[in-house]
Amino acid sequence: MAVAELNEHVRLALAKAGRKLAAARRNLAAGDFEETCSCAYYAAYHAIDAALRVEGHEVQSHDGLKMMFGVVFVQTGLVAPEMGRALRVLKDERENGDYALFAALTEEDAVRAVADAEALVSAMRSHMRLRGVAPEE
Amino acid sequence: MVRLLHDREVRCRLTDALCAALAPHLLRVSLYGSRARGDALPSSDYDVLLVTDRPGTDLKLAAADVAERLATDHMVEVSVRVIPACEFERLCASGVAFWRKFAREEVVLWRWPS
Image 1 (cartoon, chains in turn brown, red):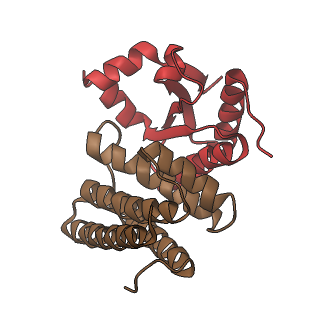
Image 2 (cartoon, helix red, strand yellow):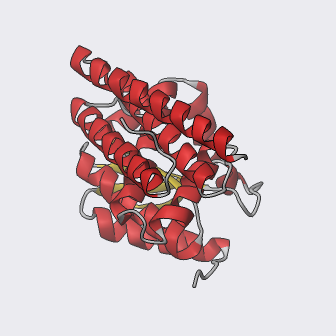
Image 3 (cartoon, chains in turn blue, green):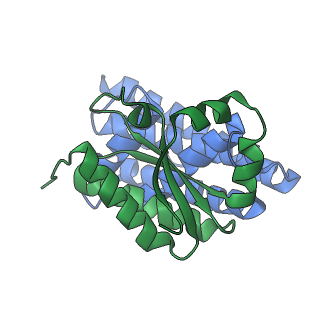
């Protein structure tokens, strides 16, 4: 991917992550905890996807993104190990919320999901800024 | 250095680690999906359902820690669902297709009291 194309991709992905975070906060305030968890996950997803592209990795699936996040960021110490767990829980709860197959999500789940998504987006933005590609907020 | 594990070793380590991390609230550890049916690919993840004696974020986080360690140390992907016993019974009796399929393919790895 050319530098200009990568910069544009990162700009759009971070903007989308920001919109998803805002939607997660709105849903939390409205008491819709399933939508909160779904939006929180997608906020993290878009930020991580962009950061992985900056590192030269294009993932094709949600499982692929989770695995590559572990390999590229967690196992190398670029982010705290708790971030790996946070992404794992966000992904599982997004699936719980979207498919309604398991236990209902609680306010406690939703509050944590928003906090974890904010931390993940912030960490990815900081990483990309260090690599010289993330736009200012 | 990542050490790859055989399927049987994964099941043992996973069960032991979950029992240690979630005791005394863990009631059942079940495998479902392709690993339970026996048609998994080498890259397939392990779908695991944990039944606990109470709901709780702390239990979900403890289970996620176990899954994260297996991913980091052995490149094994585990998707863990934690569900309280009362909810599990309700869902199993719901007749929803997912839960009918779950009942057919479930492999119980551990059950209290074992």
